[in-house]
Length: 116
Image (cartoon, rainbow, N blue to C red; front, side, top):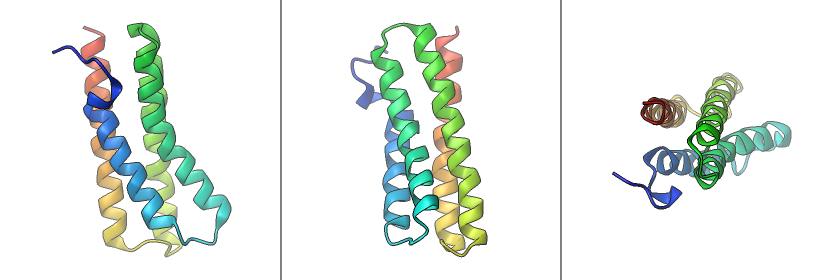
């Protein structure tokens, strides 16, 4: 199946869902450094997928996908801190962590497919 625009990519769609979740759950957080970092990391996931797709070469796209995958890990790592600092509930942690893991799996699968 040919993809014509990055918005069709499942991992980008999942990353967008993650970003919306992060922004929603941390909108009132007064730890501005923390809030800024987790928001930037979540945006990085979806933006790197989009930027890599627009690069129009598989080699560059794969590089951007690895960066996006790394940002997923950063978001998940920060979610553990958010839970420890009581910035989010256990339920919010589970939801956002699962979105991050889903995005990571989709990105990994996409990298594998592009490497075939």
